Image (tube, rainbow, N blue to C red; front, side):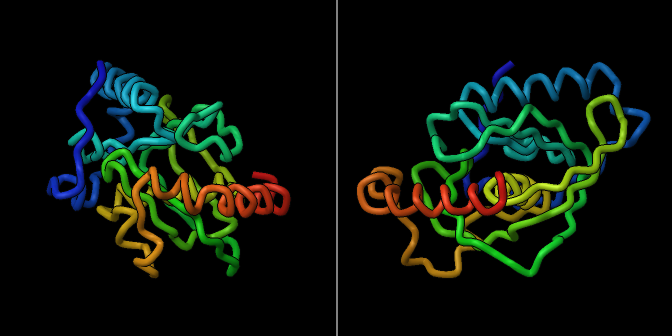
Length: 190
């Protein structure tokens, strides 16, 4: 089932999501919801989506990047489901990432993201996940994790002069950002 995506201004996007108890992860209710979350992400051409973006404040998000028309410069990320995640920064280095969001339609802005993170949580079977992500991929995971904390990308934009519509991003900023994204991928591998 494709869910409606909550938009900026909806209070659910500002809630800190609640953990899913380990004994409920493999329940039909949670498994069907995870499938719906994946279908909703695919339907909207998202690189990821968090549960509270579809008005369910649970600590779960999914990411996947493969030939994504919204983010053609992002490296592939296999379909990943992370329940009850925690993130640890592994570097003091940061990069500016032009981000957009399904819950903040038609807006882009430069957000500072850590270049290397460790994300731990549970997969959809309840088994432990321990991932180290670098570069643009690390930025994608940080963006989705922020949703579970009730944070939207505009909250992290330090220079509001970088805010622009998608059309203006493509017209004035995409070319330079694609070069920067290529440099990040070359340096960090993802």
